[in-house]
Length: 276
Ligand SMILES: NC(=O)c1ccc[n+]([C@@H]2O[C@H](COP(=O)([O-])OP(=O)(O)OC[C@H]3O[C@@H](n4cnc5c(N)ncnc54)[C@H](O)[C@@H]3O)[C@@H](O)[C@H]2O)c1
Image (cartoon, rainbow, N blue to C red; front, top):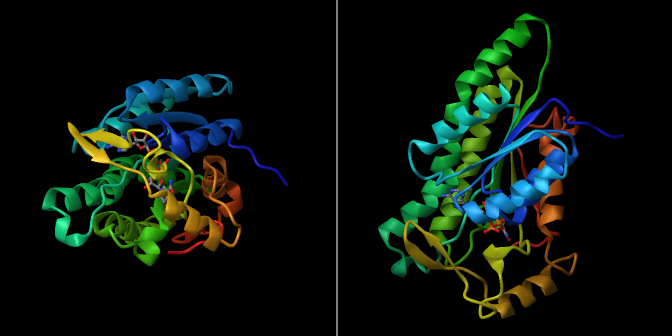
């Protein structure tokens, strides 16, 4: 059995690299028109080039999702570009870790902002369009399913030492997902979350390999995972290895596709069976 997303339009945040880029490519492969966003303009243009080979309409909007006015502008841009918005993947994220006694207010808040407040603002920005369209379709006797996929983590479902802020943001977005599933069920929107285990991207690059940091709001934030932790995860993971961005994107694609039309408010863990 196969499916097509031809005629569907999608927004993927944090699609300049890693899992977000793989999601955008798989959506385009399935026939969707995709608008991609990232704060990092140079990698976003690489994703744009990769999508250019897939023959679907696409667009890219660089910008910082944590700027309070940006989520509205991004959704408006998707609607101006495609005239519709059927699929939203709230994927953008980063980690800013430390044990609680070394976690500043700003650091904790930053993790809530990117992982919880941003998906809230994106969904709120899309709500007028979604409700208006759905009411029209329902009045016409048509059932058109729309899709939201929020990205969470086993740090959110299990907790993880050193990640009070990240885990809280990733746990919070599960509550948001389950609530929106209930609010938007009547509009035929499936709202689900995918939680990843350890997927090989920049976020979990082995410390010491290269200069492992990201720049957020003019701050250099160290990222990466100690190689011994990665090795122990490999050993404890039932599948015996870390995941690839493409495997991670596959779980997201399920929730973007008609295969999940009767699944909503759920969290699918894609982590090779590994838990913290
Ligand atoms: N890699 C893993 O093991 C793992 C595990 C669990 C959850 N996740 C989650 O998966 C998602 C994707 O992460 P990844 O591993 O591909 O990381 P990544 O660093 O490779 O990609 C994340 C992208 O998000 C972008 N981004 C971050 N903040 C942004 C902002 N304010 N505005 C716009 N773009 C922004 C970054 O620039 C980056 O390109 C994140 O939500 C992450 O928390 C990843």
